[in-house]
Amino acid sequence: MVHSLGEAGWRTEPPPFESEGKPVDIWKAVVLGIVQGLTEFLPVSSSGHLVLGQHLLGFRPPGLVLEVALHLGTLVAVVLVFARDLGRLLVGGGRAALALLRGRRVRQVMAEEPLARLLGMLVLASAVTAGVALVGERWFRQAFEHPMVAAVMLLVTGVVLRAAGRAGEGKRSLSGIGGADAAVVGLAQAVAIIPGISRSGSTIAAGLFRGMEREAAARFSFLLSVPAILGAGLLELRALAELGETWPAPPVLLPAVAAAAVSGVLAISLLLGVVRRGRIGLFAYYCWLVGGAAVLWLCLPGH
Image (cartoon, rainbow, N blue to C red; front, top):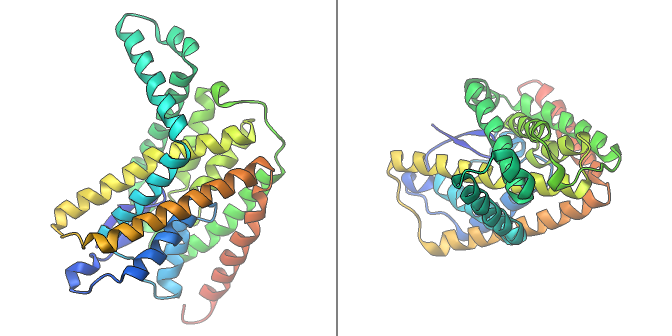
């Protein structure tokens, strides 16, 4: 079995289909790409759906090769939507690095370069997530073996989303995010390693609870997804290298990447609009429906 990092969470998977001599169907790859793009960014927990789908529906993960391709597609989606923000962050970070090399003080540079400050907050939040993930790695892996955990955590996600939907409009913009705010959002992203806890939902909710503007909370969450997706992809690439698996032909992978990218762009755009209107709580009903149905099903004899 292979362990890889999915929606900021550990997944336990069998070897890729190719190693078993079974070709990957192009239409199945496209459908998986659409599902990946939607559940990666909408606050419904892709990891929770994966765990429950495996147990209740007999769904089998697509394998590491396709996993890497789908993560690439979702990364493309974030880059497309936030290309301007990411470009400005890189420029601001570069200017700050040059200023520090010239002997300027960190506090002074951060005050003069708001984008460098934002980049620092993203790095801090990512570091908090990584630290918690490393400390709790064994527990997180075990959580993915129990579908009831995913079902119950979907109910918890619904509660969090409902509370976030009722939170008032904060006053803190992206440039005003501080170290404590970043740490709390990073911790929320770490908690989302648990299957059933939505990464986007928990991080946006954490930002709203910290008094961020709705737009700021959503944008910080999506920008924070870039290192999370990159980390997941790197872990999967390392696992692929250890397995020595070959990649399927581009006619299979490219449509899957495109489907994940397009559905990801649509999901990001949809969620941004929902958050701006203060309606993120609407997703709570879906999480309660799926989580509640799963709990009832798992409580039946034989499950």
